[in-house]
Length: 264
Image 1 (tube, rainbow, N blue to C red):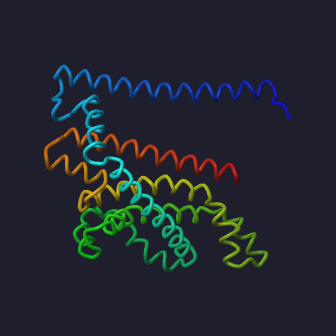
Image 2 (cartoon, one colour):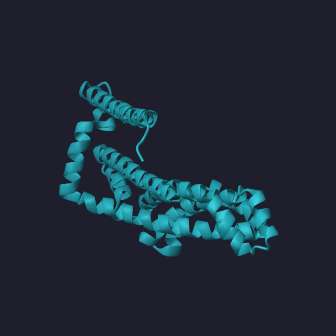
Image 3 (spheres, rainbow, N blue to C red):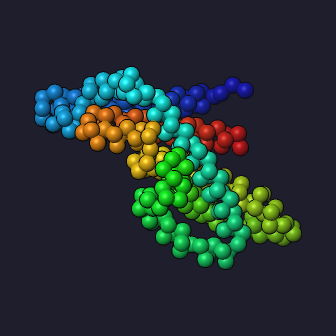
């Protein structure tokens, strides 16, 4: 089936708008980097404290040669993905339990709020004692950060299910399992997929927090190491690498969300 002239013009307009948006974003990044480099070269800002794009590139190349940079990147991504899978899986299961057992939800609700507000880094020493100074403690820290958000997001999605759909299924004597699988979960499909993007970001934050406390590998470790030896080029390089990792992981979740929504 061929497209009409109006449809073609509409698609071209969308494509042009997308190219324009990406172009502006790249322009902003280039202007920022160029301004940063000039200010550093002219000593308007302290190059020792703020570094510069040129020094960061040199430092990243040096890190790969001397500190096995890709090994650190892989470690951080690996820990993040484990925490992400655990967080979204447990969050989904617990959200279902809270939805099905209203009394349980009322009992747990204030505790979820308190845990969500609690700075998780304060639990760091306890986590280290319980799980040891190893990867387990890092993943546990990440799980504490992403799990509560996942539970709250998915559970609220369940609560926003159209009540008329539920009443209709009940009128046909549908079981709780049928209502859950045929109305509640499908209606919350977008919310569940959106929670993936939140969860991956929270997982990365949790992993870096854990690596700050106890690690011998990872981007968080490199940042702490740079701080200890007072080499701010390493610190800034670690931050830039984290920005790229965060962007890539977020975009992967974004692509996954679009693909799954398209299939549905």
